[in-house]
Image 1 (cartoon, rainbow, N blue to C red):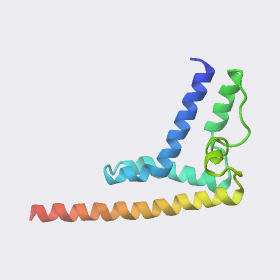
Image 2: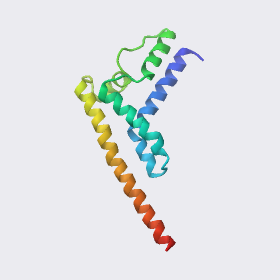
Image 3: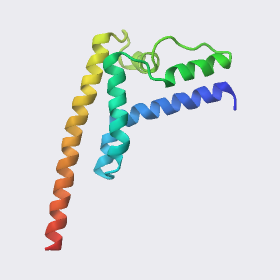
Image 4: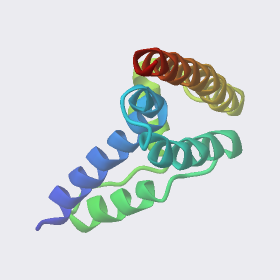
Amino acid sequence: MSPALLADLVLIAHLGFIVLVIFGGLLAFRWRGAILLHLPALIWGAWIELTGGVCPLTPIENDLRRAAGGAGYEESFIEHYIVPIVYPAGLTPGIQIGLGVALIVTNLALYAGVVRHWARRRARERRRIV
């Protein structure tokens, strides 16, 4: 498999992971086991955002792109691919921390809804049994 194709696959996996971090809590409405997948991803994603860290997938993709004869990029995945779409002026540390806080607050609200959903479903099931 060529390094360029591998770099594209890492890019797709990276994007999929970000989607899981942002929206993975929604899976818990249908499948309780999703929490076991989503919470570690959420913690990692929030930690990367709050600390200004770089996900390990970014240097892997860069190395593969360089091995394919292309140029890697110096900034993080989010700064390179997402920020130009969402924040054309650039990502500042304050915005990055804000994204991390928003991620945590949004998911706390989402999981509160999931818990209410489970409680209502359990109450309906109990009424059916009685």
